[in-house]
Length: 186
Image (cartoon, rainbow, N blue to C red; front, side):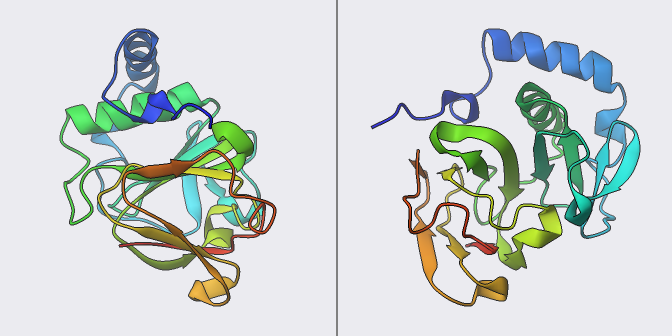
């Protein structure tokens, strides 16, 4: 078994703290802009000061987070994503929900590698194409207190894979690799 991804567990320390400080300085007013805003435009994300359509590709981003507020932010690096989550958490912008304050992390490659999509719960069935992540998932880490599911069809149709609360998988297996088209948390 592969080691559990520690970048999503147990807070922020060491190089993660340094990355958070650098990102906080770089991101400037992140906490006062769209991360804490309640308005959102589904299928779009903020990336490097621009609004991008996720269904048209991530345009250079490698990591995106969909906050419970409905806002989605993308970053050039995973460290940027983790720093934004840490910053939003530190200013109280990540509300505790019925699924806790964790995220469901989906990765495009095995062993928690490749592109990363972090989703806050609870979340009704949502098509991963809205996030530009349909047929991409190879591994996952569920840090929420809710069970999550992915389905091979849109809107939860077709076969479903259960991702228990506070659990993870370094590889979903050949029967699920790059086949998830929708997701639900809770």
